Amino acid sequence: MSDDSKQIRILAVDDHPLLRQGIAGLIADEADMTLVAEAANGREAIQQFRTHRPDITLMDLQMPEMSGLDAMVAILGEFPDARIIVLTTYSGDVQALRAIKAGARAYLLKNSLHKELLGAIRAVHAGRKTLSAEVSFQLAEHSAEESLSAAEVRVLRLIAEGHSNKEIAALLSMTEDAVKGQVRSILSKLGASDRTHAAMIGLKRGIIEL
Image 1 (cartoon, rainbow, N blue to C red):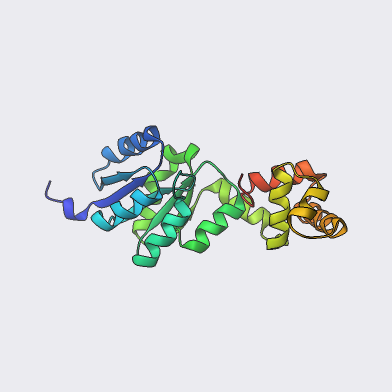
Image 2: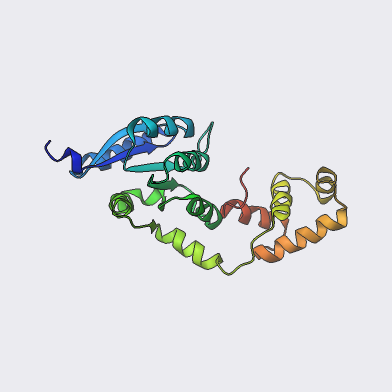
């Protein structure tokens, strides 16, 4: 094909072969795109990026061995001009913000790939940034809220793992009263009705992962 040099060269990174096949199918029908490589985890992603230097990398966040976020940070550390589109099943605003701060040019939900992927690839290739509508809403909805401190995130993670205040106090070498104070602050900041509700919100928004 004579216009190969003009094609957008794409690397697809996801630990689910079916999703990679779906992406390959979408790209195969586009004259201005070509899938140059695939990877199943973060480590492979870095190797494939070095080998192929793709124009666009589609990066899943939740993968075994090495997360997409860690792989993205590593790739951008070595190749600051890399254009990475994050793919995820989570619309959580905290996770989205983390990826964007780390350098992602776009953040798309997997359930809307067939509608949004091709447009996002072209937009990012043209130098623009793009967010899934649902993610934009989440970011806007929570933008004015006070975020949890690192200490509160640690407490929230232990709550989600099923620990009592007493156990958390022992694990973090704090008094039980100090833990209770942090739990009150967490509930207030998250607008949660109780500890279980706070843990659910934390997981949904990507503040914590189990």
